[in-house]
Image (cartoon, rainbow, N blue to C red):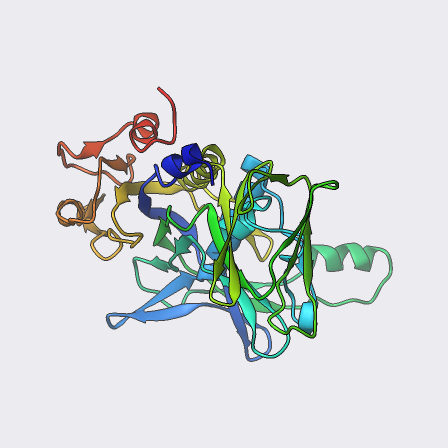
Length: 359
């Protein structure tokens, strides 16, 4: 890898974010008794709460990034009769989804190439208990229209468990992993200087080939190659070859910026034909030394008369993993009455301080 690329790696720190939003438990669970649509529930310290699952939150975040930042869906394959991302066609250099959310590509036997997701998410768990609310529904409008056409159709009644509450969720971004991926293969990748193509055999079985072809590759030297979006480095280790994919630093920063902007402004979330409002009423974010949701356990809400306040921020600020200014957003509904030299209230100024936006 060229020296300028090496020096520019990891200039962005890990990020931890915790949000509180006013939403509904629309992430449904299995049906009860045939026609009761249940919600996902969790016992938290003896209190029955509702929650939105981590896969659902991942889905909402990625769908938002598709619309807001023009991220593309990674190609899916049925390789090995398993629905999985196709790393023979995509990789972290050309796919934001594979870079941010990871993958597992299984091959014959128990062999696989796996990437840990640099973007971590928690469940979104309600901060108030589920009180067994349930609503009755039926398709009356459609039946009435059918009856007017002379059709003898009756309504199909069903019930839904319902819960509207404040929910808490956290996100982390591992800036060391994001923008970098490592494969270990048994065969030395082949480079054709005339066609500028690189061929990589990722199979662990020397009798079977699973080939990935990459185009528009420029050879810098015997071990380093350049692509439109980054670099590829090849090293010999024992009897294998280590291939490192490194995204350009400006693209890495751009992807982190897109993720944080989506979280800050709100996620597109639809379930059971209903919109959910995953828009942060409260948010705390900071660069951290390790990609851990360091704020999650501290943050909660407390009600004083008609006012609702966020608690736990003073405890958050004591955490030694914090490695820079702490961004805090509140609103009239969820006020934060605390001042500290570590706190930044200006979103754009905070993005500049963490190296994701120019002055």
